[in-house]
Image 1 (spheres, rainbow, N blue to C red):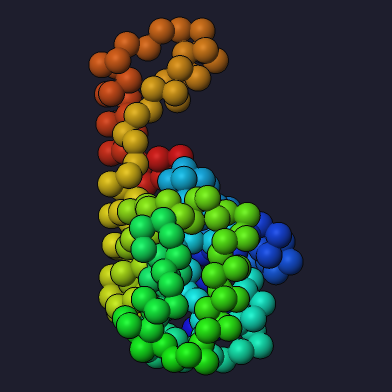
Image 2: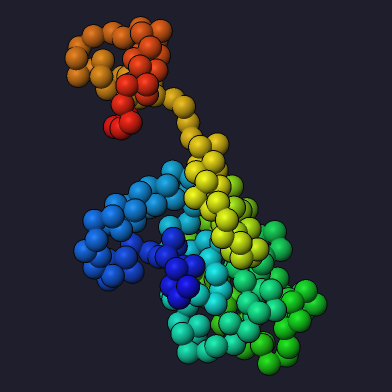
Length: 196
C-alpha cells in the first residue's frame, strides 16, 4: 500500500519531485488533476486522505502511532471533522478509543490541517467523489472501485457540448443548428471508440 492511499492528493510540487518517466502515469496524474479542479476538490489534501499514509504530514514519517489509529478505525481525515470543525481529542477518544498519550499526535495533526493552504476547502463538506473515496478507504474493500469511480464521475459530468459547438462555429464561420449538432454528437459516439 505505502504511498498509494495518498497519491491522489499529492500536490503538484510533490508530483514534480517524483519525476515520472512513465507516460501512462503522467497522463493519469494530469487527468486526475483536471478532475479535482473540475469537481472543486482540494488539490493537495482531502478529507479522503488516509491519516497514516499521508507523506506530506512530516510527523507521520517519524511516528508509527498514526498507524495504530488506523487499527482503531480512525483512518481518514474526514473522521477528524464534525461539520466544518476538527473534533476534540475527547470526541476521538470516545469514538475510536484513543488514549491520553495520543494528545501530542492529535495536536500535530490538528495543526497540520488548520495551517494547510487548502484548509478553507478541506473544511467544506466533501464532494461526492471524496465521499466515495472515503467509503472505499474506511471500508477497506477493493471491489469494483474503478466502476464506482467511473459512475460517480459520470453522475457529475455535464452533458453540455455547447462550448465545443461554439468553437466549431467560430472556426468554420458557420451556424450549426442544435438538431444538427445533436445528430453529429450521436453519430460520433456510434462510429468510433475514441470520441476525442
